[in-house]
Length: 278
View 1 (cartoon, rainbow, N blue to C red):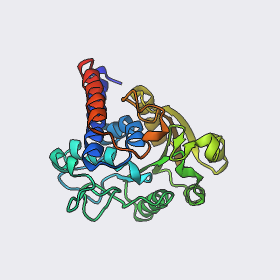
View 2 (cartoon, rainbow, N blue to C red; view 1 turned 60 degrees about the horizontal axis):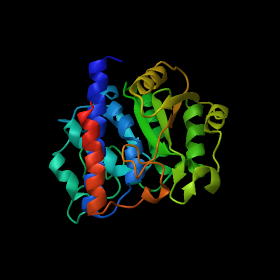
View 3 (tube, helix red, strand yellow; view 1 turned 135 degrees about the horizontal axis):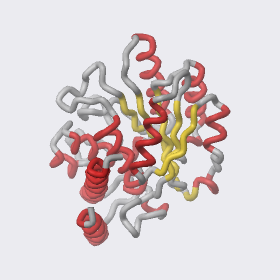
């Protein structure tokens, strides 16, 4: 990856992380841990990978994105705002009465949101439907979806993967945010889903491993997915829950807890220091 592009992506991801802290602090609720872990992936998708037009959110030929793990909406909202879909000043209204930024994505009211999600396991099914629709209509758009590693305990996820493979949805790219933690603790202890890779291969998907915080690895993975014909791709993104904020990293308690005033300042100071190094 060109160094200038990589540097800008790092800045974008750091801004998304700062927004996540501001949003959840303002809402006094939300899910910062899993939002922080996908910041780099969303930065790449929205600023490099996807063919989208912020001035025309309903453009028929746009690439589609479905946040299947919808509780990490703060990260998606930041990516949308920073990409130009709406004013970033709206972000602090997350979860407030009258705001179009609900706790989970709402396609009817939030510019740039392609699918309402929140009930875990359902987003990937919607993404499969979008991908099949493109195939049937001869459209060229691609469909991307991000799931949590805890979310894939849902049986519907595996039905959707079987569907995707059966219909040869090579325009579908599934990303699993493999940060190792879910609301009740380590995924390996709550309901061990390993090996994600071997199971996905058995279901007929092309499987790619990726470092979800390294932009060279991210670029390589998405480029490989675009080159696959005849089957959908599933990217297993190894990430750190709470990435970028030291006291949140790998701490399950930050799955669904908002920072207080003191914690917000500590987190933002860390991210501001990170920004100075870029």
